[in-house]
Length: 415
Image (tube, rainbow, N blue to C red; front, side, top):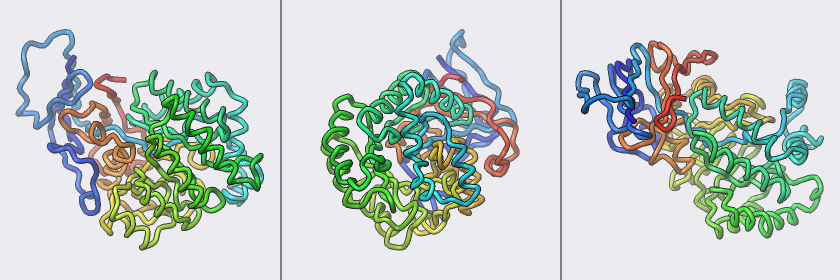
């Protein structure tokens, strides 16, 4: 099956030589072709170029489709490398508490936050969780996302964590998205382990991780290494146990304080360290000498009223930056990556080209899949979207409240 997208006003973020990530000044560069074509065969991009150079190959048959993209642009699909989109119900009552001035930590101490989601999850079946998550999956597909990482972490006991990871596995098998699964048993200390945090860490290490590995339910392992949650020492113990089972780390770090999460992430070769509201020169230096992707989550900082991560300083220091949604019921109830781009420009002072790279190729790196998605390149999976008629690429994040996506193509198929 072949699909030709022709007369493309601008084909955005092309690569003739595949890159795994972009850093520093390179983040402000997005290669594009005007008046372009893109040829897809089965699920892969096989060719692209200037429209006048397109030469039809052979006789067209019933398996050949043409899409006219006159006055429209084509972008690679978003890659969202940090979400918690498998959860039970919503938490809008806590939203009111936030409006009244309660902090994230205060809500958690009152039994809200992650522990609230854990209680709801325990009362929900796998099928109920799957049905709810599928609605969210379909929503983000329509918003241009083609690959997503999903974490556990609302179970906080062995049965609950396994339940979540099985739901994620089913989503992998039944949706067109490319999905990576992350085990986050160390998301919070459950109330029954209050004052016995070491015992909960023991449970994660001795019971949860071996079972997760035996059922092959996770690609990565994560720890919320931050003030009021898990210490550096806890994190090291959990990461060492995960690595024994082949689970590479991805760390929640430095959202609430300068926690040491960045350094421990780099020490254990984490694929990414995420949140990063509190970053100083020592963390930047540490990251510069690593293969770890710094990932900022603008939706959470926006929703919670947190400090903004110094993303501009990090890029100017030569680092790469990824931007993910943190889609979850308590601190970022949106998986709209276009809006995350807009927040990146407005609140973090990033250029449109920088947020394009931050939400595609660099988030793909933070999922370990930038060799197959995250840009328009020959041989990569045909995950992309066609915009409505727009004047410039800058208009896409500028019009932050507008739905500008016309057609979504995943694995070479129109959705």
